[in-house]
Structure formats: structure tokens, C-alpha cells
Length: 204
Image (cartoon, rainbow, N blue to C red; front, side):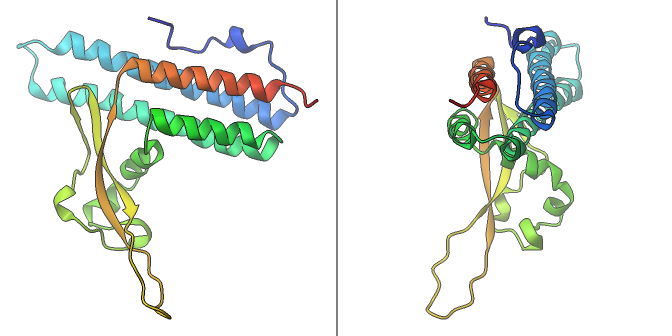
């Protein structure tokens, strides 16, 4: 299989327009490689500890640690790319990147948000301290089922308002699953490298 990691030497020829953008891209590559490491360790651990002598706790908690960290690092990549818009005129390239990424990892950013707001979830709160709906979907820390990471997200619930009625945003919980297949990360890597090359090109 193709190498999961981004080799820094392979992109060293790319020169960017300002220090801020260069610094963000350096951080981006680091976060991506940490995501690749977590995914690689997830599958390695799954192979090594899937034996009878290991306790269930180790069979579950260690792979879950790497799966959870994998998506946190991927989310960091997405947030860094979003920040990069401030330092380049090629905002269309970044917008296209996000559009394509969403097809590979739907709801990626929501996955990390649900982990980060662990305390709110225990108290059955949605975003902005609003009470969550669909309590039966209360997956507190997530699961791994058939090589897929499962967790919950908070999404805005569509509501029809009467005329002159004060609008109120209400959120509900929604359970999602995201594939841990390495091929997904390779697709992400390809799009990321293409974006880095595009951002380094000089304006005509």
C-alpha cells in the first residue's frame, strides 16, 4: 500500500508567500503525520491483541484510543486549513478542498466536537447549553464496530416557525459512523498534497 505519511523532503521545494502561511503548513503536516501514525497503530494493535490471553479492556480501550486520536488529529488538519484562508488569496482552492474532504470524512469536525464537550454530553446538553433531544442516542464516549468509529454529534433540528414568532435554535443528537480504512486517509493525503502545491503556485 502507498505510504501513509507525508515526507517533509518531498514538499521542501514548495515556497509560500508569507511566514504565517509557511508556519501553518508546517504544523499541518505534523498533525497529518500524527494522524497517520495513530491509524497505523490502531490497525497494528488490532492485529496484535486480538488473542484470547488479552483482557477485553485492552482489546477495546487501546484500539479506541488510537481511533479517537486519529480523528482528533484529522480535525486539527481541517481547522488549520481553515485558518490558512487568512493568509492566501486562493480561497477557492481551500473551499474546493473542504468540499472534497467532506465526501471522504463526512461530519469529521463534529466527531471531535462531541469528544471535546464530554461534560456537556453527560449533562445531556446540546450546543449553547440547550437541552439535547433523542436521549436514546446517548453514546457517551463512542464505539468501534467493524472497523468503524461510532460517536454522536449535535445537529440543528429543522423547525417551522409561525409568522412573527421568535426563532429559537434547537439541537438534537445524531449517531454517526466513520470508516477507519487506510484508503480513506490516502485519499485525504492526496487532496492535501494537491492543495499545498496549489497554494505554492504564483499568481499569474
